Image 1 (cartoon, rainbow, N blue to C red):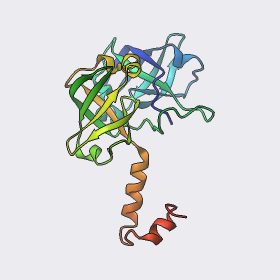
Image 2: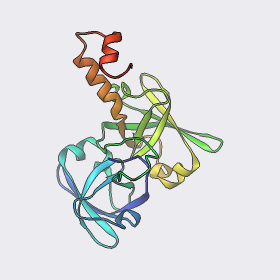
Image 3: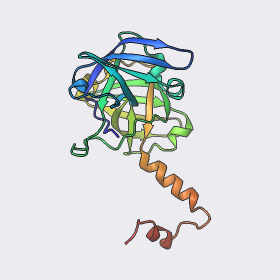
Image 4: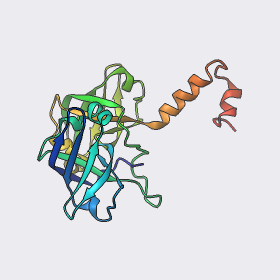
Length: 213
């Protein structure tokens, strides 16, 4: 699990692409301070496993499912990526609960300055937008953000200067793809409602499922 608080920007040292998979070597610093074989590191919000490492980089395999359904397939040497180590139980949860399992890809539709902030408008498929709610949480390229606007076609987030300057959002342009992970709580709610759809939603249902005392 992760928090969506990016620790550092890494740089692609080398990427070896197969037809539907890849092996990537990423230059990094902070995330390597206590690294071990088998550790999980989120790369642009994608949970990857460390299979090798040295003093200045680590290697991870990208399997077919991940390669096809995330923007990792577009990476090339010298590209920058957001990096975050897995959450420790003793850590503060500064963002929100992030699994590192990307739901899909969105496309940056517009960028707009708003004094110190930058508005990002993201176009996404309905399969993702159904989980996006105003003032809810969303993860974009591994960054925990708050939804500031949502409709049936796009959603928007407002980026503060620190986040803009300390993540790869600084390098993004209109038309670029971003990895999106929706709030996992919304998926559990959807599953529960489908499972109990025959019962209907009433006071007893809400009480039985912990929504009322």
